[in-house]
Image 1 (cartoon, rainbow, N blue to C red):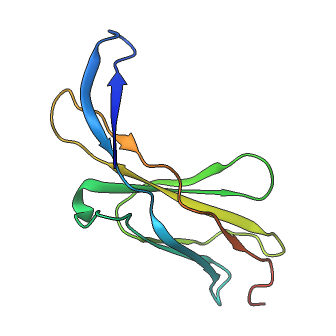
Image 2 (image 1 turned 45 degrees about the vertical axis):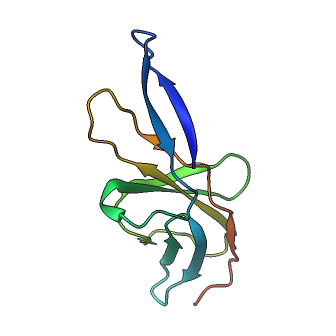
Length: 122
């Protein structure tokens, strides 16, 4: 984990340094028989206390990464409206949620991307 220094955009004051959490690991995606996509991942190295973590799942078909869902509190998500016939790329970021006043939440670097090919169940 690396230290990050945040600056309040309103006051330009330096805010209490926050620790950047490790990127999530072992991201996997698979088609479900009902057509949805099951995404799973592991918290990053050294992150065992899930109560203070939130995850953001991002995807892309081409071009820019798009947020799929934010503020996930566990290590899996089912996307029920994924379209068949599309190749998806997924990645996950973690965010340490800090309770102390004057502290900021810092997002991890993204996980390695995983590719889900369009040949899911009929």
